Length: 297
Length: 297
Image 1: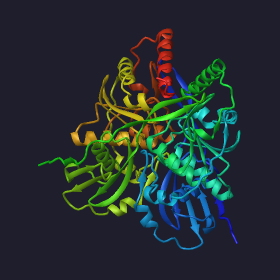
Image 2 (image 1 turned 90 degrees about the vertical axis):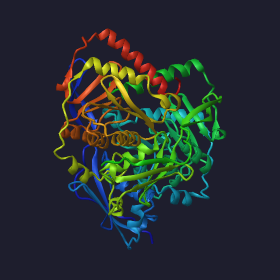
Image 3 (image 1 turned 180 degrees about the horizontal axis):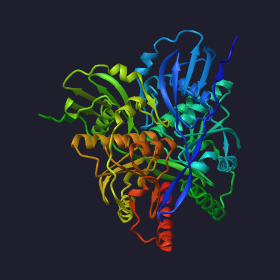
Image 4 (image 1 turned 180 degrees about the vertical axis):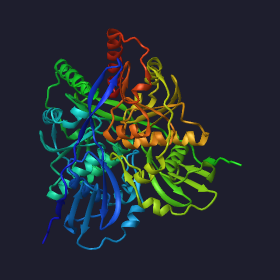
C-alpha cells in the first residue's frame, strides 16, 4: 500500500524579494526590488547532502525533486517524512528504511554547464537508456497560445529579475509555474511536485526561460515529458541528447517566433504565416520582454 | 623556491561551436550555430572530484580555478602537474605532496543559486572574514569606455548564444575574456588564470554577463578584485555579501546605463549626463544586444 511522505513546515515561509536602494548613472537614488537567495541545507537520514540556494517558494518540492533527479531516492513512498525548517535553513528527509551508500553517491558529482548539482552523468544516462517518450502532435496555434499565457506569468521576474522560470504545461494551459534563482532549482521543484502527485509527463510540455543544456534535457526526460520549450537557446549536448531521447526541442520561443531543433515533424504549421502581423507581434513582445529585463517594466 | 605546475595537453583542443539545422515558424529550414558542452572529469591525485561541462576554451585555467575556489588547494606551487586529455575527457592534477581529506571535502557541497559546484559556503565565508578589499575610485567615463570595449568582445555569444562571458579588466582595457556555457566555469577559469600568473586583483574590475549572485560575489572576493560589474541583475544575498566584503557592485550595466548597489561613493560622475544623447546610445545598445540574443545578429 503506497503512502506518501508526511511534509512538515516548522516555520513560516521566507520572502522572495527585497527592496534596496541603488544609484543610477545620473547619481539619482531609486528603489529596486531584487530576488532573495536562501540557503537550504538538505539532510537525508541525518547525512548532509547539499546546500541549495533558493528563492524559497516551494522548498518541499525542490528538496524532493533534487533527491530524485540526483538518484538518491527512486520511490516516493520510500520517504517517511520531510521537514522544512527555515529558522535553521534546513530540510530533513527521513526514509522508511536505511539508505546505504549516501556518502558514495555524494562523492561522485557532475557539474553541468557550470551549473551543477552532481547529475552523476554516466549513471543517469544509463538509467535513461531505452526510455521511450511519446511523440505528440503540436499545433503551432497551440504553441502560440501557450507562449501568450506564459508571457503573463513571470511574476517575480517582472518584479526582481535575476530569476529563472519553469512551467509544466498542457495544451495552452500552465499547470504549474515556479521561479527560482537558478534554473536547475526550478526544474527540480517541478520534478518534485510531479513525483509527489504521481502525475505523468507524457502529455505535458515543459517550458523554461533558461538555456536548453544537457542537464535540462536530462531532467525533462526523467520527468517523462516529451516536449521542451525555451525562450533561450540550446547547447550542442542539449541538442544531441534531445535527439537521442526523442524530445521535441523548441528554442528561442517568444511571441510568434521559435526555432525547432528536434521533432519538427511533430509540429503542425496551422497558422498561416502573416509576416507583417507576426513582425508586429514579435516586435511588441520583444520590447516588452526587454524592458522587463532591464528592470524598466 | 616557487615552482609553477607543469601543464600538459595530450590532445588537440575541442571546438566551441557546431552548426545544426533548425526549422522556424514558417517551416523554413536554416543553419544555426550553437555552443558545445564538453564533459571534463577532474581527478585530484587520482581521486575523481567533479565533471565540469565546459565550452572547452581554457581547460587548464578552468580546472585550476575550480580547485582553488572550492578550497581543495591553496598554494599554486603545491601542484606538480596538470594534464588535460580531451580524448578521455579528463584532467588529472597531481600535487607534490599528499592531499588528505579530499573525500571529506567532496562530501560537503553547496549548490548556489541552483548553479552549484560545492562552494562549501560556511568554510568559504570563514576564510573571507577580515578580507580587506581596496576601495578604488571609478570615473564614470572609464566605466563607459570599458562597457564600450566589452560590447565588441562577446565572440562565441555573438555566434552561438547560450554562453556567459566574464572578463578581468583594468581601467578601460580587457585583460582577459572568457566564455563558457555556465558563468561559474567562466569565473573559475579567470580565477585559475590569475592564480597561475600570480596576478593581483586589487586594481582590477571583474565583468560578467551573468547575475550577481552570492557565489559570484564570493569568487570575485577570493580573487581579491574590489569591483564587480554585470550586464544582469543582482540577488539579495549577492548584494548583502558585496556590502559585507566591501565590493563595489554595479549591475544592469549597458551602454550609458547602470545601477550601483554598493560602493556608489567610489564613483565619480564625471560625465555630464546628456539625457537625450544617452537615450540614443542606450537605445542603440539595447537594440544591438537584443538582436544578438535573439540570434538575429
